[in-house]
Amino acid sequence: MTHDDTDPMAAIHAEMEKLSDRERDYVRARAIMPSARQAYMQAGISETTFYRRSPEHRAYLNQLADSIRQIRMDEALSRIDRAIPEAVKVLVRQLDSQKENIAQAAAIHLLDRILGKPGQPYSVTKPEQPFTPDLTRLSEEDLETFKVLVDKLGLKEDTGGDSVAH
Image (cartoon, rainbow, N blue to C red; front, top):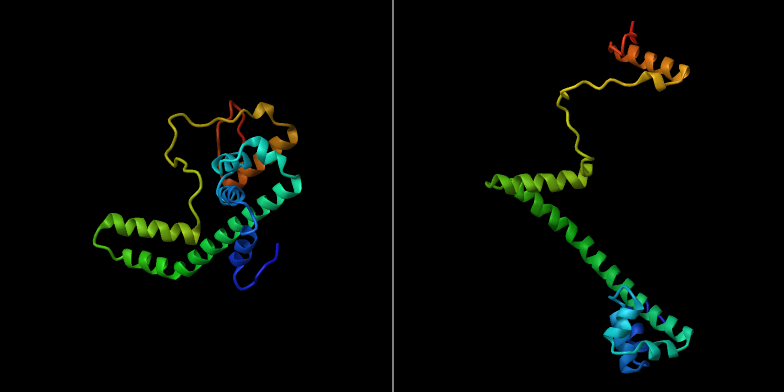
């Protein structure tokens, strides 16, 4: 398959012209279908007929489909890149909306993109029953490390009779 750097689709179209109608239909379908089976069925090609073609020819057809898929993806990403400045302007304008829900949604979208989405939510309310670790499972070394951490954090907990912090 030859490539024309100025118009990648032109080279693919030239290659497609060499194919039968059903093969062209297969390549077009394969460019959007997740499996060869779905594509040859969509193109009206039986499984037997499809696999009668040489492995090299099937690979060639799939390569054409992959090229179409990649070109479409590149074009879509390029359009998105070009639209980013306008999208940001729209979101920034929406921050000044009189409708609170619109301004809030715009703020959330901007913050999510700048800072990243927040992690898994967690509760900051005090639990009804305090957590009491089972220190009997710790090795002596781990217990000493735990005691040092509790001391550094200035915590004093009741651990079943033994005071961890001094």
